[in-house]
Image 1 (spheres, rainbow, N blue to C red):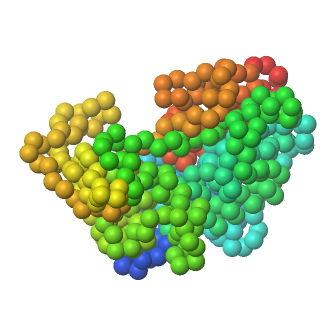
Image 2: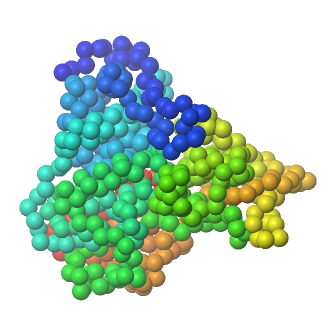
Image 3: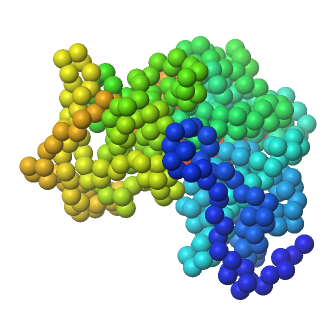
Length: 476
């Protein structure tokens, strides 16, 4: 069914707002913040699409989802067909519909974005993925005849899962090795329940199992088994390293070794994998945030995830300490908005220079300096400069450092013929993602450094194509 509205009429329809939990209530629980579109809202939002002849939104999607086609199917009420259309290019639609920064990608490229607000592509993706899951009728892609070739994927994060989905469709046997006890990588241990529920990730993983992907948990490649053993003794024809950038970075200031100072990775992993978000049910080994002063240092999405989790764990005062202004914060605008609504206090243009402990080695305060913005640095953002004489102490019980991560070094350290570059990241061809070791490819944050879920998925798709070409031709 063609859209009955003329383009001028479509542009008069305002972007639909997704219902949310009340801020006061949600700051006390780990239930999902965004509640999803109703049928009526979804149809209205889909009707805003101009069905461009050359849709820029597709160009803006790192995995190449056929946005125009799936939105038209939503308008027609063919929700299962819409979900299946997305799944042709994106094996994790219920995940990306929740955590993908669409405003920088598909929605950012939408031709009506600047004047009228983009079509809510992410909202619609989530809507059809949730409809499909609730119906129990999953539109899994077709699987090609078996090729007899085996591919090992190290890491079950977005890059690894995306590659696995594409390779299994091409008929290759795929085994994903995960060091932890749950599948999903950063999707399961790094993103809190209120943004991405664990059962959403588990459902998507189960769909991949139904497609034929094999998963092995508690396998630390580099310790349990090496890359060389996978290629030789285990009979894999190719290996994809997708281990991510999970090594936390710190500030390098005095006092970071005090009890009560965490990396964001450790804090979020304890909350997620050890089920601290199910308060009262599990004795999770994490320092109690109840009625405490908690600060997260950093301004990205991980920082927002950590401090909003601390707030839900009962923090009395929950601070973001960020050395630039709000305009420079790399976090998604929606995450900053939600955090402020939930009572998170933004200490902008502030920078901790020391953590101060008590006589028992526990954190009691942060010594901070006020900052001002100077000329732009290499990132294009104005460099923060300390203001002399502005030092003060901020009482704190818990400090969480969220200033970035670096490469997971284990595979590289046990596979010396894989070349690395500065920071220990794996050196891979930009187009083929081939490493210096024949048969071994690398994709995602282990190559690029920390990036978004969807960019890692795009890299996984690119690697899958290159692996398929290699297995088909035998040429390196």
